Image (cartoon, rainbow, N blue to C red; front, side, top):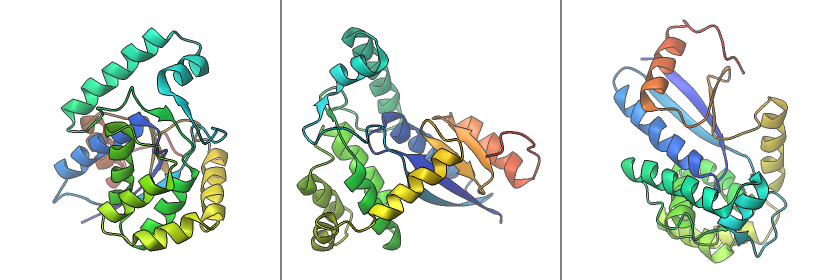
Length: 220
């Protein structure tokens, strides 16, 4: 059975990244028995310069995109409906603050070494989008670490150091140079770029074409 490698470039603070992974998981489940997959997450920061105290999300998005808070609220409500249909908890989507996610990305690098990267990423999504928790707060981050069965004390030591910082910056630079300017971005077999939170059926078709070497375009 062929194995496809999927590198996911995403940010903890990106709701479409949570939606995109849920759709990816559905696609992978549909192809169970036909294809195998390996998944690795890579860092992208939507708000690398965000202050530690953050900013209310609707005000932040309104300022960032030059649209009214009402438009942003409607946009967020639409995402909540999509998320609900995928079984995701987005209850805190409109109550959250825009946050810096650098420390979360450092812990995800560590979690990969422990074989728990996806579990920790999903725990971060749940904390931020489901509970509107401060995803840049060390206590919130270590709580997520503990929830997925990882060593919270080791996570605290990492957070109190600069460990994995270089790896996160290298990740960000690599994918920026590769042309990734928006997330989620799925890079299949280190060659094919699939941008955005595509529907499961689209992903299933793309994966089959890639596995059969029938795809000629969208190379990364």
